[in-house]
Amino acid sequence: MLFFNIKTKLFLVLVLVSIVPIIVVTVSSYRSYTKLVNEQTSLIASTTINNSVKSIEDILQNIDRISITILQQSSSVTAYNTVSDELRKLRNTNDQYEIFITRAQLKLIFENILLGYNYINGIYLFTPDGKFISYGNGTDLNVDYVPFEDEWYKQTVAGKGALYIGDVGVKPYIINAKSSIGFSRSLYDPNTNEFLGVFMLDCSMNIFAGLNRNPAPSLSNIYLANESGKILFDGTNSHIGEYLPDGLLRKSLAMSGSKQQFSDAESLTVIQAVPSNNWKVIANISVAKVYEEYGISQKLIIYISVSCAVIFLFLSFFLSNLITKPIIQLTKAMRKNKSQKFVTVKADKKRVDEIGILYHEYGKMMDDIDTHIRESYQNRILTMDSQMKALEAQINSHFLYNTLESINSIAEIEEVESIVVMTKALGDMFRYSIKTDSELVAASEEIQHVDNYMAIQQIRYGDKLLFIKEIEEPILQNKMLKLLLQPLVENAIYHGLENKRGKGSITIKGYQSEEMIFFEISDDGVGMSQEQVTELRQLLAKPPEFSSIGQRSKQSIGIKNVHSRLALYYGLEDGVTFESEKNKGTTVKIAVPSNWEKR
Image (cartoon, rainbow, N blue to C red; front, side, top):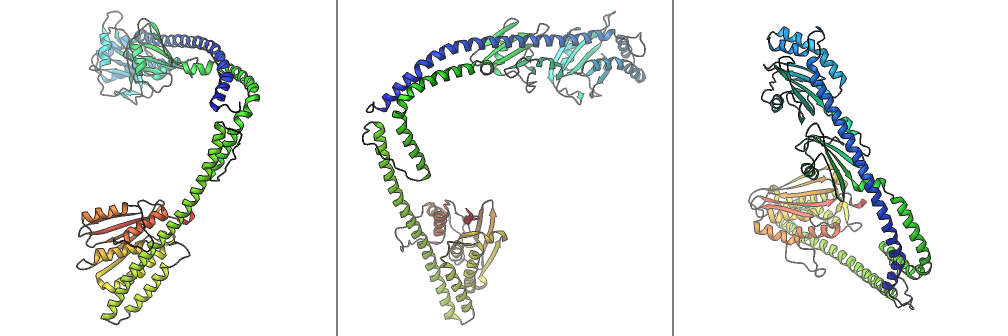
């Protein structure tokens, strides 16, 4: 067994431990589980549909009874006058006082109806000549409302006394209206069959509250829809007024007979028509949820677990040490290496199978990786340190040359105290440049370094050069890499303002945005052409490269070296950006992380 390959060992274990008992248990359990779920689903669907249809029939009978018997009810003041008598009086008069008296006499009848049914929002009577009587629970009709051209009124009159059921929605002709459903009927004189008007009940959606008697609300959803598939009620009260989902709508339209059942792998749908109209009650039951709620899965899991556990106990006794112990040891060693602690493992020379090969190759790989990382890491540290020093050396030597040239020029022309100022500023700048205690300095020190440089340049250029600072106070104490701003100011003078006729200005702005500090150096000098802009952007896009320390390229070292130092130290790929336009000036923007020392 020691010399078998791992594939053979795993195959034998899987066949003995898993396949045989799992097949036997799964087949027997699945049959009983499926049978139980199907029986439970059918029971839920039958109960839900029957309860819902009965509730709807009760609702419609109540509405039908109210609309039919209202003509026979007597008014509150004159016990011998019925509602039909009052409607005839209302039809034959235009006197506002008589209309008021008629409405007052019908008030008690309307109040009794409203108090008896909490889902009625309002009761409205419309006469053929345009008069109306309304009584509502916090609602009323618009005073100028005329219903003759509305579809519900036309359909009601065309029904010749049949009950008309409107759509669900907010009715624009009712004040303070909410989503509701209207029931209306044409009224005729019981004796002469004379058309007296139209009676309408505006009912809130609470009218269908009885449909919520769902025996399993977590498993199924109940919908009440009209003949076009528009939802009048649903168990969640979140889709009223919408159309049925596509799947249910297709099933509803395809239904034949008074009741039909549709089933698939995911759900069971039962649709039953309401006998008194074209409404349909739809019960949609999730088969998956029924399996979860009513399955015998717990017993099956216990049975399978116990069976497998017993088998594994016997087989694991003989096989676990042989197969799993070396794999576990190798896994632990690999996990320890995630924390960059290189742990090697000693291979068992007696093992010649795949596990023995893995141990041997893994140990060899760890040794090779450790050696490679150490050498690569040390070389990279030396390279970056050399690159940083080379960059500063290039910047310092370049500036020294330009400054000494300026001092020499002034010394030859005139003997003034400006030379003292320039030499003091130059000394301060050199001391700042050769500071070795840290690569990071306070932003205020970097700004002071720029001030010293500009003191020298303003003596050289006189009133031709204007220097403006706009630095936000809070950023002055933030730490930043030194020698970032002065090279950019130097570029602005020598490449932007030196060849400009007349006066020029340099503006340096400093501000903080989120976790970055930004500095903008702007000049109103000669600017750059589009070709120069493109060439410089291509230069900045190149990664920092150094052939050897001490060698310098012939290109401008200012903006490129600042960009390289930001990339090497902070890892910023877009640490330097710029905009320039010919004969209008250039703006260079650098970004530095704030509070870098604390990171």
